[in-house]
Length: 287
Length: 251
Ligand SMILES: Nc1ncnc2c1ncn2[C@@H]1O[C@H](COP(=O)(O)OP(=O)(O)O)[C@@H](O)[C@H]1O
Ligand SMILES: [Mg+2]
Image (cartoon, rainbow over all chains, first blue to last red; front, side, top):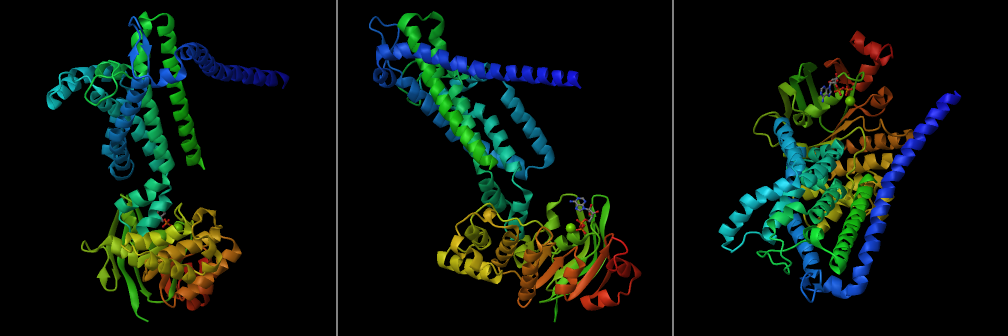
């Protein structure tokens, strides 16, 4: 009896420590980012840092304006969402409601595979296939551009959008669909007028998850976007918040390095905001 | 009273399971027909063959005919959606959509092309009145239907079915999830509705069949054992198995 209780307690304790470890990591990262991100911002000035249009970190008169990165990340994500969400949404409706079981099993496998491909592979294929194609089709000097990055991101967010939307659509009680069919609605009408509205918080969560994935992606976009700190324009080389940190970190020092930490902090805040939105939708879905 | 529906030699299989065996029945118009029998005997299955809700289950195979106004509803020319509009259904578990009360009722008419707000308002009010629930909900039409009690939800589902102006209303144990007071309200409602609609009701409750139905069909293991006027079936059953069932000797 007593021994059992002791074992219970020990196990409970171990799990608690493991749980705290996770929380500890998150806290550590947050505190570290805030502490190391603040100095550059105070030195450069919050306004000049966030809204400065020029990034020239290694010039003799260095400038640290990250507006190009912020806008590129926002435009790139928005573009990926604009393309990826409709495709992912309709694919999810098709797979969860219309596809026959064999097609469904096959396509679900493909989607899982798509989710498992490392981002450097997306980048590689993008670099070798997409970038030259964009150069040819749009007749521009360099295909490495915001446009190419948007295409790659759109494909990369598809699996999360499809899977999360599918889960939400499949959780819609069959009774709702039966009721609609029994009123003489066609299956398609039923899916779009009853099932989709009933799954809307889950679908919204899928979109937000896609936003999170797109804004946080570094490797693939670095390889197809040209990585030049221009103000964003669809067919020009651009640099994202993520790639701004990644591409200079290895050789940076002093204020430049501190500014990179500040960029990471800004990115972190974006992600926090997106996570809060995601939690909001997930909670709504539960109710 | 003329007959509105007739099943002829109807057989149904779920894969290998022979769930309905040579069912023959005629259902008179503007009356209440009850299906009774032990659970698993095929009552729900048969009810669903009457508006082709079984089409949705891939393994189902059906032979024989179900005629509605003289037309075999399993004929390939029949528009299933139009058929289901005319033969409405109320389910065992109340299943209002997760929308407002108003939108629940307006869903059917909207699906069938009615857009005018005035027209929809009119249909919503009339359907709710016909389902004897208007007074309870008229001040909260914009509220979510899931906030209502189970009994109210079921009457809302009846109103929703009435909103597309069906000829027949199929009800599958509509009161099995409800308390006695809600149950008797639905029973009163059914008796009221039979003035304008044909009602077919599945019930596991024999007293309910006696209270409200004109004709009763007794099913056992996928077969229609006995069918006739309710009063007669319960007082002088002709089949031994019917007698055993209604006297509670099995099932
Ligand atoms: N979707 C289904 N797939 C396979 N078998 C089913 C299905 N629905 C019902 N059945 C079987 O058909 C028989 C009749 O079921 P049902 O019509 O639901 O009976 P009841 O409504 O009288 O209780 C049962 O043996 C049941 O197991
Ligand atoms: Mg049943």
